[in-house]
Length: 173
Length: 387
Image (cartoon, rainbow over all chains, first blue to last red; front, side, top):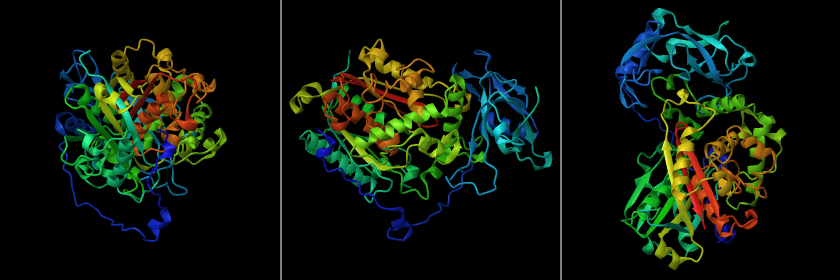
């Protein structure tokens, strides 16, 4: 069978057809709200963030200190054992300079690009990274391996969320 | 081995387009009908149906397996939908393989349908919800971040340049010029890729596959039935799948370990000892150009950090020693998520039968592989095919 010999179907229409209202299009905002239970591990993680600290969880079998903290070790498949405070400093594992918002719209002219990074936190096991943002740095100056430190919201503005850390900024050393 | 042999005996695929007038059901029907016609069967001959389709959020229809069942030929038949994001299109035939290899059924229709355009202005908006709701979503992530972060890490680890990676996009979009279903066939240069809009450095627009609508389908049959249907069955000799943790930031981003685990499972089943010698042609999943290289390494088709050398040497061209994505891949043919992986399986099926037309690779390959990958960079799905 060669594909050329078949009627392939799938009829293309243009974006302009959509804009000109030639298709039925219903904007719809689902009226749903989610109350996510934080759970034991993430609950403590968020509570500690409100206090300006980062907490991890250790498995005494594989001896990993894990971030984000978890109540069970997925490698050893057993409950984890201890809470361990880690630093609010770390190293950039990788980063991007992003001109696209979450909904695929583009950032406006003059706005700064988003600077997402994977940051390996000091005190956690090697390779334990978290997703966060970089700040107080020119995009062209960011390097993989660069040392960074958390910049926290003011204590009274913290709400027990990952955004209690505003971003990570470069530090010497 | 305790399994029955399973063959692919027919295939169908729609055009891949940015926006299709047809509904997801209608696309599924078009591909399924073509697959049946291609091997002279009707729905009466089909004993069960396996449907693959990725996030419900694209269609705004929750549990869309049920929604798509009639167009897929699942009416009053044993029918099951599953999805593992982008890995779906290769997991669907694995799932169909279970049905037939187990001895439960002699025939199975595998259908993968995806309509991304229902979700607008852009399906990207639906992807925010795949990130962890507490620790990641408040940072307003876009899915492109994880690819940009992974690509940057991959480049840094092995000293690979953007210019080199762009050659994958150049190759695949050119290969797609010979695929009748292709959405983005193009003759472009490395400069075109580098000069295209920077979305999330190091990812430019032409590094990425498009959003697509489309469907694909194959017919599976047990050995004794397959031999009655066709004199050119293509055997599914190995299947493998693997899911890594959702803590993606904890992973070695330079190497897809979950793909390796899936590949080793499929190779063991197929009796493959030296994949670099025995896998003559492959369709690694290429939603981003660096992914083809990254996945070749995970599939053990190239040593770590060395896939780029095969690319630069021309080995992965259609007329090279080890053709990769001769179809044009997700970058060129298009990327209607679930349908893309099955398009890749169909390409290997056609290539092993010598029926790929203008895309036919030289050398009468006997053994090929299709791979897909998805979720939060978590899943690897692999099938090994032989004629």
